[in-house]
Amino acid sequence: MTGLAAMTIAVLLAAMVAPPMASASTDVADLHPDIAQALEEIPGGVAVDATHAYWAEWDMDLRVLGSAGLAARSVGSCATGKICAYTSASLVNMYVSWGACSTSLPVPNSSQYAMRSLANARSTGYAQARNGTTVLATANAGGWTNVAGTPNSIRCVL
Image (cartoon, rainbow, N blue to C red):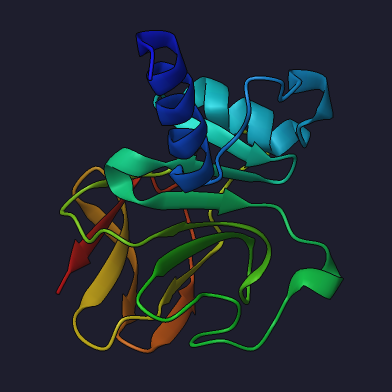
C-alpha cells in the first residue's frame, strides 16, 4: 500500500470515529442569535448546531429550546449529573449546562442571557449563583431555585 493510500484510509477512519461536532461549514448566519453571542463572549466554544454550543474545557452545553424541547429529566429539563442555569425563572427558556463541577464556572452575561433560575441535577453537594463573592442563590442536590441579581459565576461544591 502506498503512503498516499494509507493516509487516505487513516483520514477516512478518523472521520468515521470522530465525535459529531460543528462542521467547518457551520454558517454564523444560521446560528440562533443567543448561541452566536455566547460563542463570541466565551472563548473555546464550538457550535454543534444552530441551537446548541459546547465548551469542552468546562463540559458546558448551551441550548436554546422551544417549548416542545422540554422533557422531564432529573430536575426539570436539567439532565442527571448536570448543573443548569436558565434565562427565565422556574427552569424555562434557554439554558446552559455543565457536567464539570468547579469552584468557578463561567456564566454568559448579556442582555440576551441573564440567569434567572438554577438547577442542580447532581446527587450530592450544591451550586451557588454568585456575583463576585456574594451568594445570590443556592440550589441543593436534586433541586432548583430562582435567582435574583446579576450572577457572574456559579460555584459548584460536590
